[in-house]
Image (cartoon, rainbow, N blue to C red; front, side):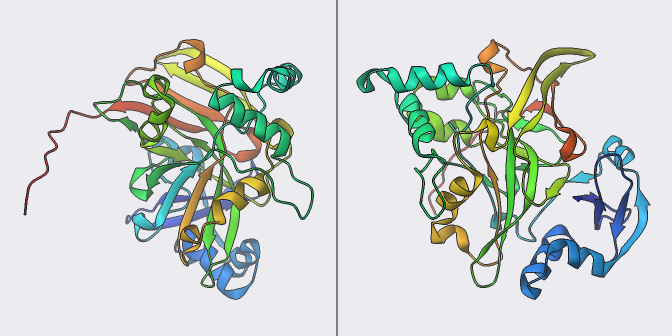
Length: 332
């Protein structure tokens, strides 16, 4: 099942669901929001699908038309945007299938003292990111991106700050979670995401990684309810006007990762801070596909597009650059 949120004719949130790509979406009767339905499911100890079935489905919705009209919202929002957390993890993917074995050999045979911190972390993931049942695996890299105020809707611009040195895409899978009243995390499902970052700033010094990640992100348009497929394959591209200036396969899923999703989830939610009742988490799981690695420098007006058939409509966002701000701290 695919679930999304759109702006209704009176500005209200309309929840749309469909059984898969190519199917017609329908509005959930009195759905309120995806957040409201998810919390109803946790409160009643029912699945989200059964809660949606109990509400019933109403009018048909043309999602392509909604996209063209700019009426998509992020597929989950929180009534208080500060309680939606955008976070992520990196160095989790093996790369393309063709290079997986050579990457493994290179990192395991090289002398430990010659490896960068990034390669050491990658090696740790290969060796301990997929623990046996009942065991805890190695913890990954982790970073914070912001809260719901930094969530760009599908179709809306990803705005790079004026001081940024780069604004580049990072096509990733994101896990979508709500925290129940008792502090238990529940996964709604997975969605396409663009974990938009400043790779030039990051390249200056790895300690600038935190700065490079404080950027908006987009995810959706639809959440695929349930577990993620083992092998996820799609495309990441950048369009400049009518021309495609970059296109590469996008691979994800545990078949293409050095960590399991369960291991990555554990190392996020092991912190009590991230189990605050009622909160929403959008946790992005890393990528092996970057236009930056190909020497591409996106420009304002370029459109990022990430597409995987099983996850519904592609995620599209144009790049914009913010005007310079004069920020000064005043004494009270």
